[in-house]
Length: 194
Ligand code: GAR
Image (tube, rainbow, N blue to C red; front, side, top):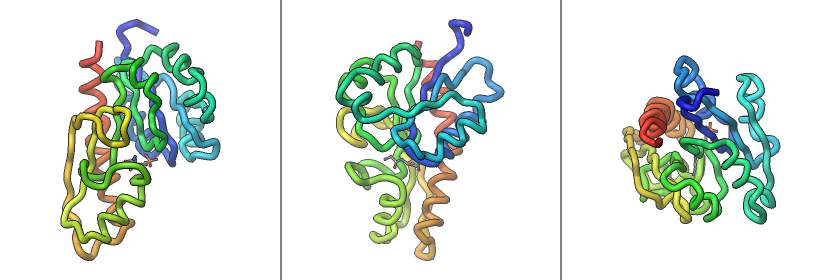
């Protein structure tokens, strides 16, 4: 591959609808390539999606991620311009963060610093937003540091939450924001790095 092509590596634990959306966004962009999708869940829907979409994907376990430098060495070998957490639920080890300064970003389905931290992911976030009768929620795209959901914020977008919105409807609204904003932010950052 030409050196000028920007390389993105994605980490995902769930269904991978953001991975698919990011892939669709960059399909026509010959300057950006998705090198690989890494998942920590053997049965994650994202693996089926990657198979269908023709994106290289691999599964890794905790030993490879936290106890040894297997994943770190694999990531290094991919020479990514940006590492993107797209629904990835494990905390990133400090040696990986140190190896890719300002190159690891995450999307969180709420307006951080609200509804962040350990255990706050996916539907848990939307359930808490509903339980607290929030009038708005949104997404936060941020750099990753050693604490869950605490890195510097890059971009936020909001949506109104109605009293009548169910948790499923809130999730739908948030996913809509993610699909609209995440690829654009990734594109901006990937060309800034390097
Ligand atoms: C997304 O909504 C993302 O914001 C959230 O997981 C979902 C993954 O959906 N991430 C977190 O909650 C991280 N704390 P997807 O698998 O359909 O892309």
